[in-house]
Image 1: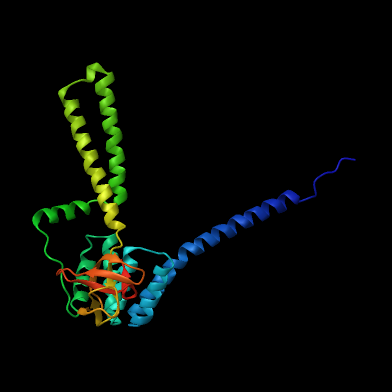
Image 2: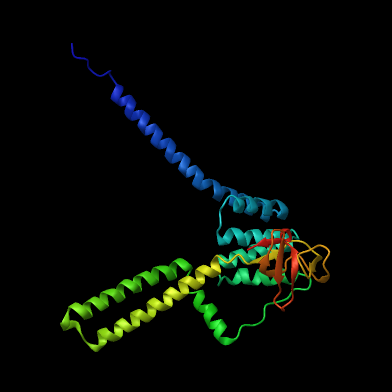
Length: 263
């Protein structure tokens, strides 16, 4: 006798599949909504003037891997209001890494730097350095890389047209190929440069006050000057425990790497 399928089995199977899909969709929506809810909750704490709690909430989101300009910017504001200058400067700097032309972040960073004892501003850029900085900010590294690939293939197409289609040989195509080659070179150089800058972790913010800077990576070496919380330093060298730092005014020395939060 031939066995038939159980009555309603297909319906049960379909219902289970639908339930799994709905549950999966709900979980995905919950995961997407959760960071926004936490961000909104942190904003609410800030609006209630609970600046330390707001800063902690923003920091937890950052520690969980969420890296957006608004998050760093708001964290900087909360830390600034909470009197934690080093963390405020750090977060404004991170916001500017993601959005270099953001005027609000620049303004608030300048305000935070005013609270840094002995703040040393970077030397003004000469005109060609300013032009280069503005050029860097036209695209993010990925944008320069995409443009580089695009102009490369356009240049290849132009060369092939010029080589294999005699009727296309003319001075306009030739000059067009020169222009594409120049653009490819520019985008390649800028892609490498902006990627290097974006991934250069040789800068950081001092997180404590009255740190003695030494002449050598040794506690017994001579003190040469002090750095304060919120100062931005460049890291020229490092051992296991010590970092050689330099300030914008040219001063150099060694401090424990533990005092620096890397950008």
